[in-house]
Image (cartoon, rainbow, N blue to C red):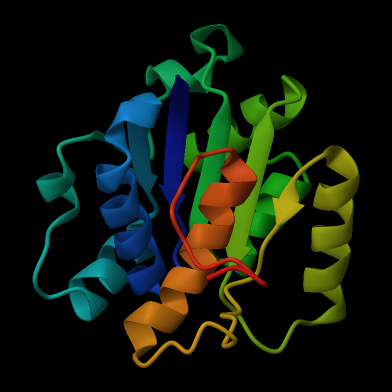
Length: 186
């Protein structure tokens, strides 16, 4: 059973976070607990981009960025996976350089130091050399960089379905068993 941290960074792309949480609701038997932490900019973007649902509607505990008493602020809580979706370049830079100055970056630091699974979903374009170097540094540290770049071979006929191709890939990387389109499958 997974214990999962979902971090919402401050870049645009709240649709990815919403679809991730929606998909997690569909596979609730595969995890024990989800803790959510949002940056201040993520809260702003959620309010701008997601009109029909509050983050609290999902029923998971949402921790404040300054709550260092959250269980996943320590490796002893045994949260196995953290997904930051979307991941701003600012959050990525702080994680890459070990600046644990808020709960999201502290949780990512814990996941890396415990050699657990950290999946970052950057939603930015174009990438600067600094962004690429931070991705390189994080990949060397064991993180998985999965940019929010949809696939189109499944014939998605809406923005939401195209974005779901990214979410399904992230959940695959996290080790969840999901029913999604597979290359060469039906």
